[in-house]
Image (cartoon, rainbow, N blue to C red):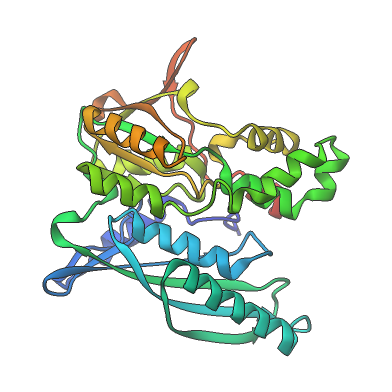
Length: 339
């Protein structure tokens, strides 16, 4: 029996299921498709945007974490996150009434921080877990003429990336593998700074998504998560039916993230990367957005160009160009599966 590795189900297998069972409701504007961050449903004068994501790798701040990653998937639709439902699965033999209450309080505070209403969910003590798991569902809304999808990228667009990678991955590694990192010679200051990445520069992409959509016509946005920035770029290209020419030197790799990945034998381009935002838009609009984000203290860079599909998805550096790497599973899963 060939068991699947830790991480997302392979994209081809997942898309095959979606193709086999197409959505028949005409009100579903965007349904399940690899690379698209959230579903879009026509509810009249606006679109309802819906997404769901679990927190499985991280053990600390899981409720806050769940709000951020789910809100990101709504934000990249050009939508405002509004309502949240949470399923909390708590480990048998390790959960007390006090710890459960603390987690629920954290969840409520995280909702308040994002001005999101907690409207429902489910909480239980579950057999077979070694840590709490939070699976969230975020709902938002967007005006019909403001919707953005992953598949909207157009040939000639600039590809813009914010903050850096692997922001989320570095924070998880620092929080979950501190003793191992110290044993491998990683300094205390590097570990401390990486732990704080969740709040600074921050996991949320809502601020930059809102600024970009307010100032420019954004053709596509995508939230890099499992599989890192490389997988997100492949997903964006596949969703839009385009190619990409990406400048390796312009991809913002956070120094601490690079050091932690190097210590653990991981490739930062394939390591879970929430907190960064990918967007494509016309070159003139890209310049406007990059400068506006800089005024708000949000780092962003032009990293490449959308090209015709037959030119492929390539990474360019001083030695030439080659296909952008493909990561069948997220690099960070090696730390949790022994791979």
